[in-house]
Length: 313
Image (cartoon, rainbow, N blue to C red):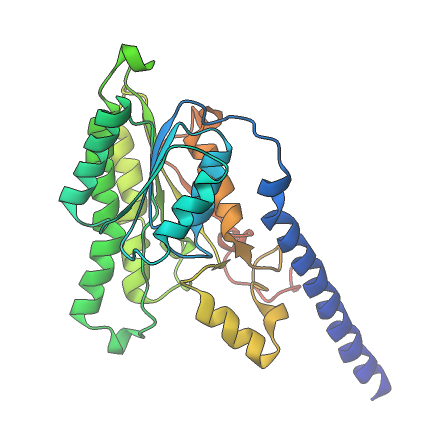
């Protein structure tokens, strides 16, 4: 009885220590931008990012990271205009040339319009980060056709439109603006749910699977061959954003925050800044030979079929 109690006590202590380590690591990651030297990896590049409105979102984190790395001009879009003025003023306090716009990422006129605007303003388009997305919490039996199609429209159609219109803009050359050949990087936010099942609801997973967003990247890479336009997706795991906020809040209220993300090998959840760093890699010339790929940024979650933690360790 004593040994059993001691074992449980030891496991609880270990879990507490891991959570403290995780919290410290997350804080360190979130302060990287503030403390990092600008390397100008996006110097001279004109960039569009959708889905920037959430205060804890991937789009917002990417906007700051892109600006920090020297993007010449940022065009930022979100369906919800609430936080756009604050985002614009916060970025412009340190970095110039930011435009924000309330727009639906699945509206073809809006997406074609912002690409055309970049060409009018700057004579070029170099990066399009199609990050807008939504998810329901409905189980299969309660998922309506309307909900399914709404999620499909926002998550998948928006990516198709981004590839269609951004690639057309990236094909255009402009020697006077330093672009003598076609080229660019199109990045789409997909999900670990698009790699393996079990990471999301049916409507969300279906719009983020290899049959949609991930497949768009692979197919488009060949449609755009020999243009130097690269198309890739980022597949995040469990990231603390506005979309997942309810999950995190529920766990914290129950006192089980230390268990969030425990199924992946790192044993923790991720934050938006970590996805923004992956987006920066794909947007920059560091990834010049990366094309048509679905890159998981999930702490290793999708690296394995489900196992009992520790059983095979």
